Image (cartoon, rainbow, N blue to C red; front, side, top):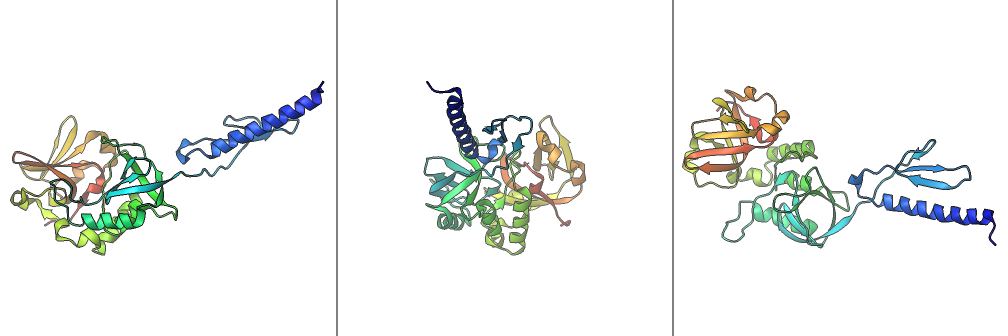
Length: 291
């Protein structure tokens, strides 16, 4: 019959193997899992690992691994499909549209798509998710990084192939993206050298009623109006920009915009003869010299 000492020895070995397996599993967790792992030895010298704190236990410094995925298809400059079928929309940026169905391509759209194809098609990337995991179309929202640690979203902005477009509460890398955009604009790279992306005076907007897509408008805020859901910065009786109240804490005092000439960026909505542009983040409204 096996002695108690031998049984304890085998039990200890089994427990040790089990604990090490637990550690391996924890090490394989994605970086957003936030697991803390504690390690200690008991009076008999057996090792223990746990996600719960024990007296005299040490917190392990774990560098979690990342999952890498192969890019199967590049749709345009900000949307790809992975080999597992997931469609991924790159966070924090907007690239010009490419031609699809009956819609004409935006200026610079094909350039951004070809850049992304050359960079990513059949390459492996890792994803970094922000607060929201998916958009209303079911696309995964992510920042993409190559195996060489290149931040693809940021590289597109640096090359002037995409503009910064922030959708709260997803605020990862905002400062880096805005700094890259500022440099690309200053150097007239990509879309910033194209006349289609020049700022349009709001006073001439009525003559450009057919304009669609992402755009830049410049005008003087002559009135600020409040509703239950929005705060409206009014430029004329026909044109305004609106800020959702739920994101107001991200903005400076909106009253500071009054009587100031500003540039607004985004997509213009038209209802009859009225134009309105939704401002989601303060980066989409920038003070300009009076025109």
